[in-house]
Length: 85
Image (cartoon, rainbow, N blue to C red; front, top):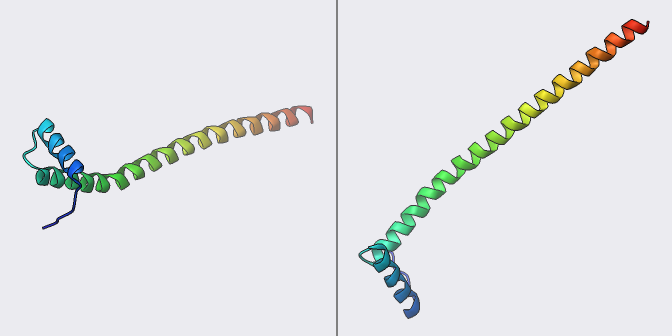
C-alpha cells in the first residue's frame, strides 16, 4: 500500500480528471499513471539505443561515401601523374 498527501485543490482536480477519463477513483488513476511511467522508462533505453544505432549507421554510410570519393580522387591523381611522367 502506498499513500501520499494531496491538497484539497489537487484532490478535486484529480477527481475531475478521473471523471472526465472514466476512471473510477483517484487510486486507480495513480496506479495507471505509475504503471505507465514504469512501462515508458523500460522502453526509453531501448528507444535511445535504437536512435543511437541509427545515427551511427548514418555516419558510417556518410564516411563510406567520403572514402569512395577520396579513393576516386586518389586514383585520378595517380592516373594523371602516370600520364605526365
